[in-house]
Amino acid sequence: MDYAKQINILDNAITQVSAYLSYTSSQSDMSKTGEEAKRTVIAILNKISASQSTINAIQRVSFGASQQDFFFGRNYNTADVRDESRCNAYRQSINAIINILKQERERLVKEQADKEQTRSKQMAKWTLIFSAIAAICAIISVILAIF
Image (cartoon, rainbow, N blue to C red; front, side):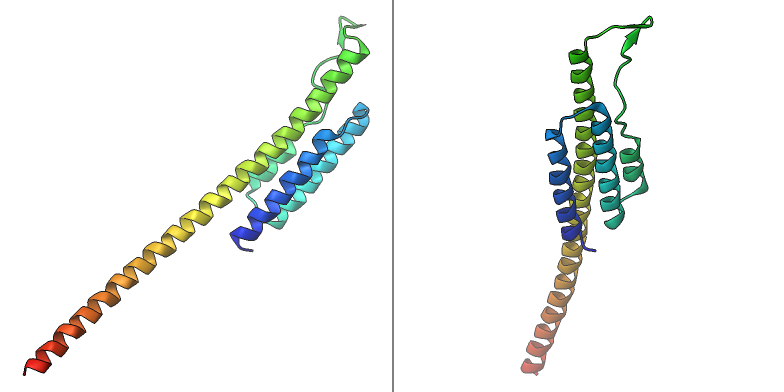
């Protein structure tokens, strides 16, 4: 698969995962939705043959509770504060996945540019070689014309 297709697939994945940011519901639903997003992203990364370190980074994103709800055995925060905290943790995890995808996209764009630059250097080298051959042929034809 070429770089343009891989980058396009990553762009679509970033858009798809960004849609998960608007999702709000109970903690168990958010956790399931977050895990679904991870599975989707991992399948996409496998499809484009991403590095194992990128896949591992996605797998390490957690959608668990961000803080303990109990302090010394008592409920420390109100339900609204806990729910808001869980929603924030969910959003941060989704944003982490998006950032990992963006980094992978940047890596692919850089690799594509490096490959194009290498190809351009090779073309310039061959152009110089053929220009030298043409110049030598021109000199030979002038010498032959004189004699």
